Image (cartoon, rainbow, N blue to C red; front, side, top):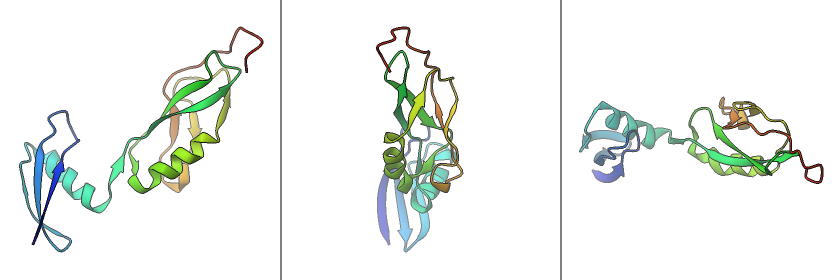
Length: 127
């Protein structure tokens, strides 16, 4: 038997969870304030996922970067490869809020979209 301590990130409460494992089998979850804590443990131990928030460059925009995010949580193993891919992306202004930046990033089934709009820069020296 093995015990692992996790902090549930499903809601703002942040329950301190103790998980008792027998090999790969979850025997017991202690400290969960709600059912979502138990679901979090199962997902975290079998298929951990996280939301991704980053920025991408914008050519001709009012600002040089626009914030982007994943529409759904990505598999944790794809976070750094996705961030590396986003470093190479350059959008052309104007950019709309929720515009798809990368559809089905790295065959994950999850798209990356902009978090805000970006108008064209009125200063012709930028971009």
